[in-house]
View 1: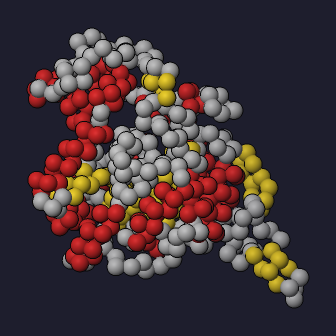
View 2: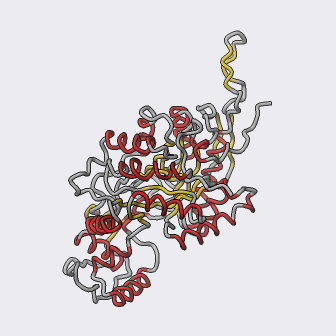
View 3: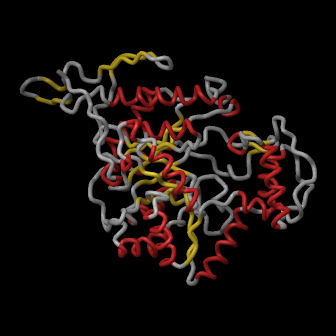
Length: 448
C-alpha cells in the first residue's frame, strides 16, 4: 500500500499566544523583510502555502490594547500580492472575513492575486460574531451564529459565480477580427437573500479557475460548510486521538456532497522544538512555553475567563478564590471567550487541584497546542505517524519566532521526510491546486 504524502504549510506568527516577541532573535512583525524571509524559507522547504491570519480590531483588556496585539496586523492580500513577486511556487493564502466585506470586491482581489502569482492564491473564509469588531465597520454590529454562516455560504457561492462569469475562451485578443473579448464576458446576475448584484466582473478567469478555499471553523456548522465547499481545513485538532476523531468525522461528511475524501485536506496548526537529544529538546520546549506564558500573560489570560481584575494575585500561586463575573467581562475582541466561562473555570479548578498547578502552570497547560518535540529524526517520525494514521493530511506550522522560526524545520526535518519518501523533493506543478493534488474547481460555464 503506498504511503500518504504529507502536506506542509507555514503560518506567519503574527500576534497570538505562540509569538515570543520579546526574544532577542525576534524581528519586526510588519516589515516586509520578515514576510520575505519566512515565505522564502517555506518555499525552499517545498511547502504547499504561506498563510496569513486576519485581525479586524485590536484586542483590548481592561480598556488597554491586549499584550499580544503588539504590532498590529497588516492587510493580508496586500502583503501576499507583494510576496507573489519574490516567490515562484509557494501558495499564498489570505484570511478574508465574509461578514464585513462584499463578494464583488473580495472576488476581484483574489482573482487578481491568482493572476499575479501564476495560480497560487487561496482564501481562508472566516466569519465574525462580535459587535466589538463590528464597531470598526459601517455595518456597525454583527450577525448571529446562524446568519453569519448563511452569509458566508452565499458570499462564497457569489464569488464563484463572479469567477465563472469569464469562460476559459472569453479573452480573445484577436487583432485580425477586431475582437478583444467575447460579447458576454464577465456578465453576472446574483439574486439571493444576502446579496442582490448584477453587472460585469472586471477580471478574466485566473490560472486556477477558483482560488483554493480554506475553512477554519470547528462548530458543526463550520464542519458542514467545509465538507460542502472547502479544499482545506485549518484545524486545531493536532493531538493524535483528537485528530483521528476529527479527521474521521469531517471526511465522512464529504460523500453527501458528491466529493471524495481526498478532495479536502485536513491540516492542524502545530509547533515544533528541536534538540540534539530528546532531553535537550524537552528542556527547550519548556523554556519556550514559559516565555510564551509570562507571569503577566498568565494573569491576563485568566482575567478573560474570570471577567475580573486579577492583578492582585500571584501568578505562581493558586487559582483565584473569587467566583467569575459572568457579565460583559474585561476583555474584548479575540481575547474574549464565547462559551460557558463558569464551566471552564470549574474545570480548571478541578485540574489545578488534581495536579497541584499554579496560575501560570495552569495557563501553560490550557493554552498548549500540539508541539512536535525531539531530535530532527524523531520529529520527522512523529509527523509521519500522524499522517499515516489518518490524524491529519499534513500540518500548518506556526513558529514562535519571526522571521527565522522555520529555519531549523526546513534545514533538518524536511530532508528526513524526503528521505522517507513521504514528502516531495520538488514541486510538481505551478499552482497551489497542483501542490495539494485536489484538481481544478467545478467546470465553468462556456459562452454559447
